[in-house]
Length: 78
Image (cartoon, rainbow, N blue to C red; front, side):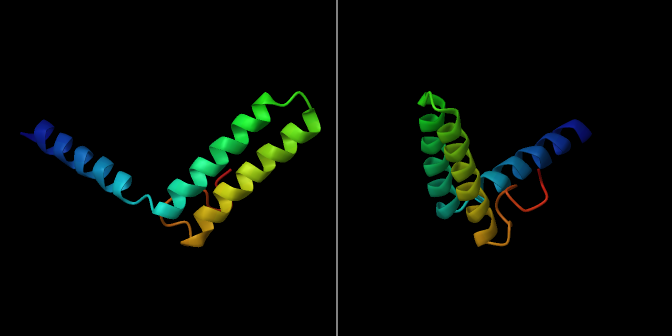
């Protein structure tokens, strides 16, 4: 009985976390993924670093738009 209750609680927790992702988070993640792919494809190291920094900024901004309530992109989590 305890095992099935623990399993149910875990399933509800996972479903709740998935439901918390806002449309802004999804959009930011898509944009950041595109920037990271572009960074990986460039042979220029300075440009690669700049693109990765921009991807991080986009993700951070999305995380801060709602006070960090729906993502782990809050200040101080890295």
